[in-house]
Length: 250
Image 1 (cartoon, rainbow, N blue to C red):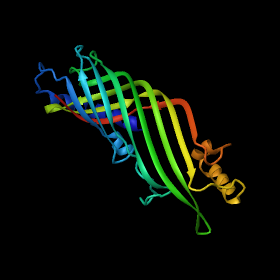
Image 2: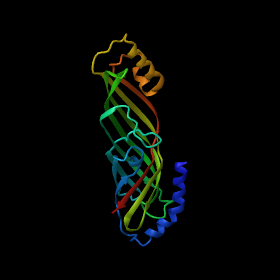
Image 3: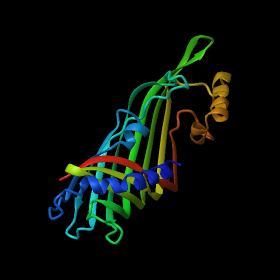
Image 4: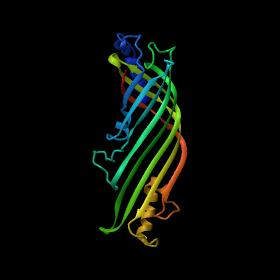
């Protein structure tokens, strides 16, 4: 549905973009674009900022671009907007870097690149991490403290299709409509306790069973392991890229 809406936007405003940019000097070549990728800001968290640069190459219908920036995942919230606090987080963050090579479709675009529809390969690396701790309570008494260190890394390579509008005075809107990829996931989870635990203590046995039954994320790591052991999950799967980017062409 999101992509269908974006396609409608392209056809709705496409003709308008040509009219707005019509009085630009067609002989002037503007090879550079700087831009802000809004998608991480709205999808990952409002403290995430990813910026990009695109350069039109000697072949005026091709370009190279790169995006890089800081990521910070928003805190979990319930339906009323109240924060859900599982761990006392001590640190969290991440970063994203993605590069792509674009082929602008000269036969379909009325104006030269970087305006119009394009396609091309892309590759990227994305990581986020969180560190924290949690008090384990037994009858309102702190039984122990568990420390948490979780990191997710994704490396992907794929093909994307998009459309870029160049408006009057050089302002741009870049829509990456679809970008299927082959993605390598590396998920690491470290759990450690402040004091040693007794594996025969019913409290910890009950905790293990609870995590397995209610937290599928943790279950992958603690299955057939002791609590102190670090967990790692590596696998390959498909991914997807989409983005809305605002920029300036100069």
